[in-house]
Length: 248
Image 1 (cartoon, rainbow, N blue to C red):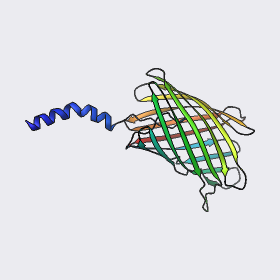
Image 2 (spheres, helix red, strand yellow; image 1 turned 120 degrees about the horizontal axis):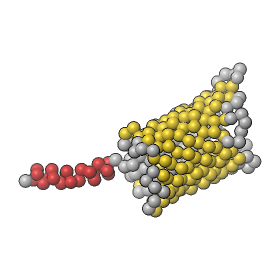
Image 3 (spheres, rainbow, N blue to C red; image 1 turned 135 degrees about the vertical axis):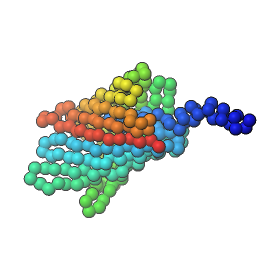
Image 4 (cartoon, rainbow, N blue to C red; image 1 turned 30 degrees about the horizontal axis):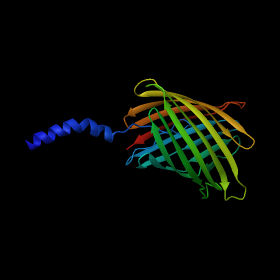
């Protein structure tokens, strides 16, 4: 009797347990816009990729673009962005290797029915070695939001500001950003997005357009490809990339 009752309870609870162990995979890549979703408590999500920047007079490849997201409390995740290496080629010159800073941050989000919103503070710490050299600390804050319009359409956006060069001799520079992204579910596993975003400096504006495809290989594994164009520059300057995300 005990075994029968236990088995009956297990069969009744199995769908619930499966859902609890397999939360929805929501990534912050490959678009520029950060999602208004945080990793569930007790889960870890890794997002990584490689991208190539095609411009004149230099070509660049950046890798591995690794982001680690850890759910530490309800609606709260901690984030570590590993320093990525950028290899730059210029005609007639040797390849140059530089590094992005180590980025530490957190994201807190709140769900409001079909809408969600949150904040994402972060700091980027310089990395220095023989091959890699970056100066100054960067501190920033982003506001994130999303709206589920239908089962297949979602809208999201970011607004952010950051201060770069804190503690460096060269002074402090500011940069603001705005983005808007339309997400489209083509099938249960395949999706696409169309995005526009701009970076604003003291004396510059850089508008970008971006699109790509995401494919849910497994319930916790997503693959992606994307392409971006700087909209106001001639000749054309852009970026192509691919990557993967894993939730465990």
